[in-house]
Length: 592
Picture (cartoon, rainbow, N blue to C red):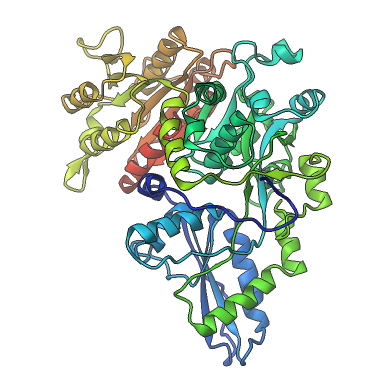
């Protein structure tokens, strides 16, 4: 049975497979912010300290609200008052940390946890059970705010879609990659592709994947393992995944890139992005648009509209979890802080960020910003049983859109520089090996090396080491280990040639991407025209080949790599701190 938007609801626990895979991977690149409530000297009677850990998307506001709460010195039952400190941690990383006594975070152990979704409380429950310890999160928890999952489209495209009446997940995201917008009478809009977070890394990405399966079986609850084995269900999900432009570890990055393209007057190859509703509001308000320090927010030229599939959607419920580590006085403080957060003035602060309130109600301003919801309100899916989620994630790895990936590896002499007791090249090779292990066996992968002119490198300062073809991880890894490092960095000519190589071998059924790994900037005088390179790799929405860059070490010119990536609608990853190289590779591979 589907839950309505008028009452609290509960998410069921995750599976052991998610515990072993999703949490570990998500923990590899977590955003950590230690933000203490700076209230000056607390009153002498405020002897209770409450540590709160929040998911990152709402942490900045919670820091401000904690400061407001602490400064008010609200009296607690039994006397005294509390000072609240807030730190921030990715929800998946926090679940993992709570299951291992909070080791390795560098943050104060919390007595209250505020993840993005109760999905994570169920996951922590599983982790605790697997470790043979008493579950820390056995209960249902109240929400402080809510945000449904939506399909966000540029307004002109959303208007055309809505003219058809209520449409489902398959109607919206399963538009034929070949016919695309032609079936809606807009052939000039070309192919239909959309952006989606990788479900192994993102709450919204996982929720979108589960929603797709529910739409395939035309139910809002009780998904079974036999449903997943149904060939018709497999075909439905595969048809939707085939239209992904590329995956992401964070929808905010997709939106920032979209805003930059919009304000520059360009076009994106994505017709939609699946994400939380509050991000649509922030985008439309210009909060995700590029701007100089001190400058006002610039609203996009074309706003996004939240489209709600007819079968229903998921709600991300932002639960308030009091952990067993809280003593009696801290529990009293937590209850009072919850009352404070769900009171009118604080709820208004959340709604200004685009959240629905703790009772699922959307403000008029939110609906004006993102678009009206269906008559009768939203319908929410109930989550599947844990073992079904396990099977779903295992199956997704075979159903997701496959990739054509050409890796261009910098073998210039500067890669011999020391990083601790190893060279840059050794560090890069090790990280590349870990990243390659995360690719799908059905991907097609090639390897080039590049430095500067050499008789052995023809027709230019780059050389094909492994031809683009069926993924052979051992062969690629072995070839990387045998590469010789010397010469300069012929960055521009290599990126141009690699991009053209993939354009000529473009496969509309795959994500087509060039991956550039470099520790420097262009040192090749024969090709030193950045403007021409940016024009050459500019995104063609009909044949999108995207460039992804990883900048090694501090000698890398990350700004230029970022320009190259953005010109093609790709992304640059900053690994100029050697400690972030593994993290950058995980993020990179998660795009495919």
